[in-house]
Length: 281
Image (cartoon, rainbow, N blue to C red):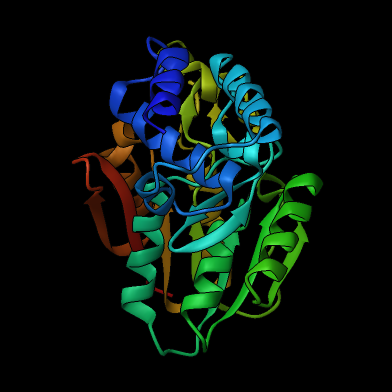
């Protein structure tokens, strides 16, 4: 088995950091063998068969081209739940788990109505529906392909989420009845930041869900906050994931729009990453 590990490391060395290669190896091993890596590695008699070795080579070839492993195997984990993913949606990030956790900690066991704007894979909406049993959850996305994936993930995790194809940039009126929470991880990477991004993100993940023009970096935050002024209940709450370089600007935007108790939080890496704001009504 040590030979497989050396083989994988040799194929990926120089493309991925060493610690990431070891993580990829264990994920690959479990995906291909169908067994937990620790169990497989503990039995030196275990070997991959010819078909499994061919699949290993196929996956390694795609990894060498910087294709994300999550797209190759078609799934990933988010907040302890399994999600299907494809190049039609962003791969859920650990930072977004922190945003979900903030909502969960504040609203556990409360009967709230939540709207997730720009749902993508559905990771936020599905996780909240799973973790907040008294919540009613809606989710919007402009992409029909993303919504199809999100609906698949809702079914996969046994939750009921009301999905709708909506472009939030075109919404100019409220939605008919008020919301307790709006949560969003909208496009926030500046076009000028593309040059600093890894190829596995830039070349494979959907640009529609990633990028915003440099001349209006807070476009989505402003539009969603304006929509929130019409659609949130008094003391309803906005939760955003943000560009780490735009924390104070986002706080100032929300304050200027009449939100109060605006709170900026850092993620586990120490970067400004999340904002909460309460609508005065």
